[in-house]
Length: 195
Image 1 (cartoon, rainbow, N blue to C red):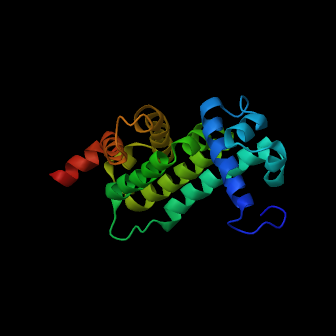
Image 2 (cartoon, one colour; image 1 turned 60 degrees about the vertical axis):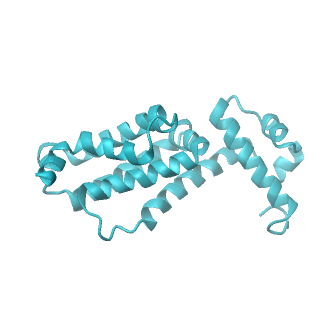
């Protein structure tokens, strides 16, 4: 909290306004093209107000990326897997993630595509997927033929591309996109379950 301001004070509202406008500008113009003056002008605030809360544009950008990473991590750690197994678990995990992306499209553009830290986010997602694959689908036909890490990285690569081209453009719903990705990667498993 900045310089002794109370929670819910006008200052907290200013900080939130700066962050919301920064998310919009960073996602539209990128980090390098967005200036502090653009952020404060968009928020109808002053540069001294900006410096009450953030030492620099870089710190603000890093804070937004930490927020994206933490919220995405929270989705997976809070997710109750009871009663979910195998491909259903993967599909539901993807749906939860896609719903978060849809609810936070500009933050997703920053945290999943724009930032250097996006690599760490994708590595975390690959690790989560490897864990699910190794615990839930270890005996599957797919994993008997393909390396788990390659499968997980391919899946996250598909998520990355399809989020940009289909999800954020609203061509596909989160549920439908998750279902189609699972059908592509686990078609043989799904056909066995349906038989």
